[in-house]
Amino acid sequence: MKVLAFRHVGFEGAGRIASVLAERNIQLDYADLYVPGAPVPDVAGYAALIFLGGPMSANDDLPYLRQEMELLAQATAADRPVLGICLGAQLLAKSLGARVYRNPVKEIGWFDLHFTPAAAPDTLFAGLQTSTVFHWHGETFDLPPGARWLASSDRCRHQAFRLGTSQYALQFHLEATPAMIADWCRQPENCGDIRDLDGPLDPHSHATELASLAELVFSRWCGLL
Image (cartoon, rainbow, N blue to C red; front, side, top):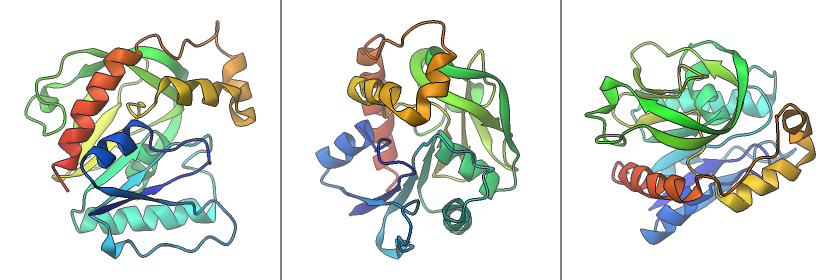
């Protein structure tokens, strides 16, 4: 079994998702359409598609983002498993006709995630309570028609949704390891965000809690494949 993940920058990989897939002998391949000349992959042989984060906006007029949204629209029409993370979540929302726009504040760091009543019977989030997770975004999205709203935070109302049985959008970063967070803080593309913070980010602050939650949620997601 194989899963295909779309990257938007080289430093935002699958992180903890890759570990969970490897434990189950599920092959993870990457597609890097942001690289000039990269071919659009044939997704037919993949059990699921993952769309990762990045510093660009879903509203940027970039050819590779348009290509990805076309693939997302096709996948959701066929009810194929999809997982959108941060920018990937926004691309999923936009591909389904929802609006993507600037959040009232940037949400960067460790903040509580609250689950909605619709999350109680959900395949990924059943039985979960408020958890502290890692966030890094300045934009948000409206819910697409027919979507189930699953999570919120105090700074951002729409943190997660599900469409159909297996298309998920997560605005937050369950996949992030401490090493990834530390690396993101060093990237030139993120310098503007770092300057806006009140103080330095601690990559290890809630890492143990995040690792346990990621293992549970991504393991459940693998059950959909």
